[in-house]
Image (cartoon, rainbow, N blue to C red; front, side, top):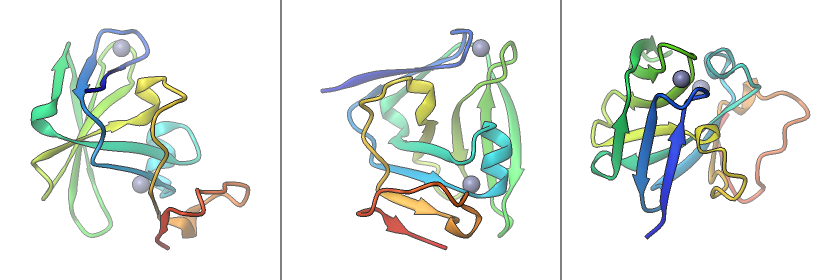
Length: 131
Ligand SMILES: [Zn+2]
Ligand SMILES: [Zn+2]
């Protein structure tokens, strides 16, 4: 089984995950652009029991367009988000794919908020696309 380690920039906060993600998606929404500092967010969803968190974290709760809450866990020293929880999907944890710093990580199969997508971005053709 594949083991992967996600880490914040300074290495203090980590998430060890067992096995492959159940879902990998990219999100082009403006809130994800602000959160990441990039033009889209990419996240991998894992069953919670396959994730081991280590280190200190702070929380930030974002309220989505439909009123749902997303709780981000980030490093108090360097500010990188290493995992987050989606309300209604409590059996899972999402890990920002960049935190794995692994160019061989599985590509996204889902692309959401494409109406906010930067014009030069080209999601994988075989992904599911949502406006
Ligand atoms: Zn850190
Ligand atoms: Zn988003």
